[in-house]
Length: 102
Image (cartoon, rainbow, N blue to C red; front, top):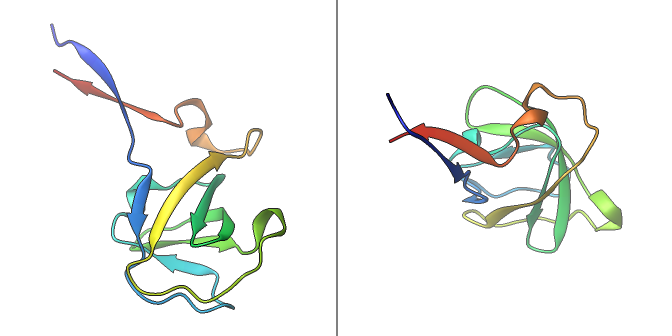
């Protein structure tokens, strides 16, 4: 019988390309780390993930929490800092852990 162990999902990734102020799609190295309802921080700007999409990125609402949308360089760290509670998502039941058989 397999034994299951919870592991934290990764909370940090990097942008693959420069992100300009007006862009709403963020391209990252590992889009599978992110879910709808996550609040991410790039430099000093917070963003709310609106729609994860298939492929290398996800769509965001820029300037979340009153932060100012700005340009961000390629390979800038993208950190998940919170998850909006009450956001209707399929993933809402398992936000921070991944079960793995050992």
